[in-house]
Image 1 (tube, rainbow, N blue to C red):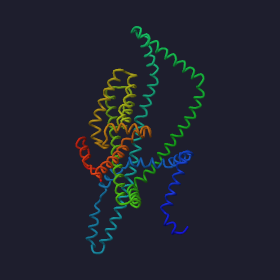
Image 2: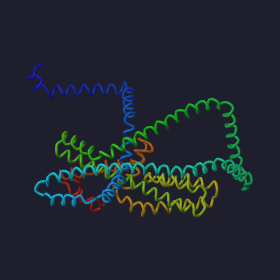
Image 3: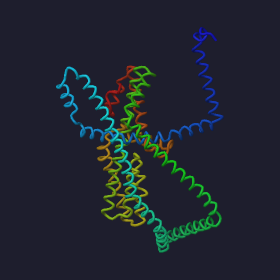
Image 4: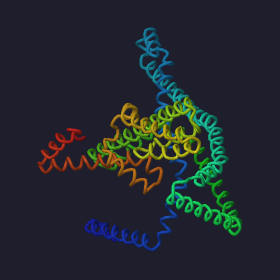
Length: 433
């Protein structure tokens, strides 16, 4: 095929190639989905340690930068004074060489400071994890053991209360119905123990082995992720510059500026929201523990941990944490369970109106409806991780759509609609360029 034919029919040949590729992809998607699923799983398995490393580095980067800035301030030994002294001694001859030597020394010192700051941030992370395990794990085990040992007594106490209940015909019907349920459940349990226990034990051993291997795999990925995160943290600026070069070499200057601006916005949204939410949840957990410990509530550490961890999830978190916590306390004391429920409601109101806004501000810029929508939508797609990151992900998408709509209104010479919206409902008066 000569070059003239290629030049004349280049567009048509490219279109044919694109259409053929799309047809092949669609056919494979419909008839051989296992190929794509297997390929995606293999790629995800290979990249999992790198994903762990990026997440660890992303969370530790603020800590590492803070340590680096502190060390730089402490170890700044007057480089300018040394350069000035050398220049005075032989200013005409050694001026340029002294400057180069000073720059080189600064670069070496910066590399050493960054290395120390990264090591200290990794040590801080492991120290925090170990302290949490040492403080929380024994109390959790004790609380769970207590629940297991006291649960039969609570059930028996409830049955005795039902038997002594005397509220007329309706009460007797409720008691009889409840006793029938208990009898049925007991028969089912006995039948299960007699006919299904051994197969269930075999399945349990298989599941236990699989779960053990999954835990080992998670620990392996976490360990590799910690090592990879060190490289991410050390060359963070370098990777950013490489990404910038790729973007500006691929797209036009205007499009590259837009991509760079969006990347900064995404980083600001995720880092501000996730780190702020973690800090907020730690504060809520500590306040809850202080209250429950001082007033002698049962399972103080366990319920405080539940409340603090679930508080990371926007909107639903307080309710998800309150329900099991109240049920746990109710097994010990009805009055304390009610008091704890009232306390959690007050605590979440304080968090939503005082503590949370102080730490997070209006990071997302979303109404309660859209936060609820994002949590349900991304939670259905990705499970618990979707509930955690669904709100900031949707906030980014919402911002893109909002600015697209505003630019469309400006292009159609209908910017007055945007102004009317801002006057009535508030919000930004100028969209980002």
